[in-house]
Picture 1 (cartoon, rainbow, N blue to C red):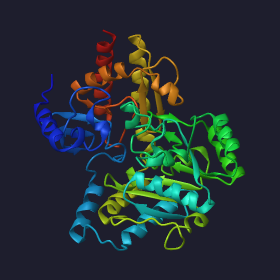
Picture 2: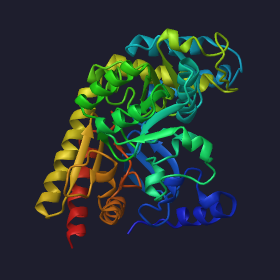
Picture 3: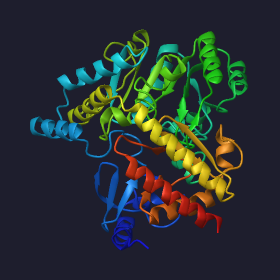
Length: 430
């Protein structure tokens, strides 16, 4: 058994000064039981905790470390910028360079505004859609998570699913009233909302590859019909690619489907692991944003030079190395091994994968929406999680989160993961 005494001691101290001992709910291990680990160091594909234990990392800070931890180009960019300045509160050359990279890569992204988090990006995108259309309501999908803005915490995913809370106290009835909830991959549910709210819907926001009820991809047919419905009703389509952007493909999930939304949101990878977000889209839509237009959004640390420098280095490395075939192939190998191992031991398992994102659902039926995701066995996942942890593999501590494969996951790390999974399945089967 691994020794976690230092993490246990830190968690005890943390609970005295931080709500629940953590600064983001899913970190608390409530979805799997036990005490969260406290980490001291990361390198490549590995995390090192306060007790000196080493783990192959499939969280990757929830997605941004597609190059692995401490990639030399990113580290160098951060160090170089630290010597110059850590913040300006004023424009910088790096902001322009990152915006040029983003607009050059993403179809239909003509103007982009940098912010400091994915939540800021999604909140701002919906505000822009409302300002552009003059309408107040918007549609989201059950199980999709778009950050912790009030309007989004209605039947949300991510930690909201992990902790069994589909909505949150503190969200006013007024905020909730303008949020319409549809069923993921079910176009009839969307049509019904349009029919019931004629001329009132400003936007539809969706994760084209959901990662916050576990990995669940939208079907191409569903997204095509969604695009058509939005165009027909004068409603803006927003792709939340905070997680999938530059992760499932260099040009984003939209490029896989061949669909261009009116607005995008980004985060994670575009900051290379530092806090950042962005929203943008068609020029005509973004020109309503202040100082060009009346829709106000601001942020003291927006376009922070450290985060932007790390993001530029990450994107340029992805462009130069084009690692997508490598990391997608690694994810396929892991997914196939998980299915095979579960089959040998008679354990019902569904493994959803898009690119280098995957989730193992302990379920007998395919997972394609919120209802099928929550039907999976969280108890079996918790047992599997701890069995993997004891064997040196760190997975997201929730059934309803994505695993992320990086460039740093080589043959040795993948083989370790497969062997650990085989032994974990044996343990699970009893």
